Image (cartoon, rainbow, N blue to C red; front, top):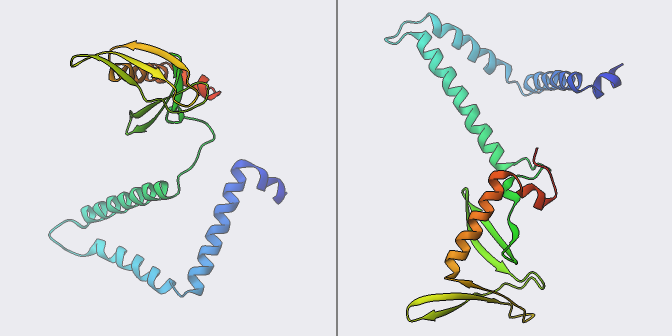
Length: 188
């Protein structure tokens, strides 16, 4: 019967909490913490009846709020120190895609796409864009792989304009949820 209850999702938690309570009680008894624990509770109860300029009931509410705040801070610190890794991908896992016949990779800083880099779709070598200028104006941007020698495309205007377009295309996929198709999973 205990084995069946242990495999039940609710009863296993009840049994675990019961065991932790028993072990916590025994550990505090063996470490001789009970005089301090009892003293704290008797002091807490006695402070309710004492006189002060501030109502003791208000002090107890403030103490409860500070304990609650400390629990939240400690919980957040534990979540940062020991993050829970989910098997389900999120939009932050979407860090590469193919646009304009080229392969693009980026990373996120905050919620923004940053450090966008372009790669050859054939040999995965990072491409350095070459600008064709007339005077001080950039006329076009050429994309050619230095590793495999493939010429990819000529884009009107500067590389910055093209990069901005790629960022907007990635944001569009994030907004409409089609980023999950790139990762091979459904986000829902």
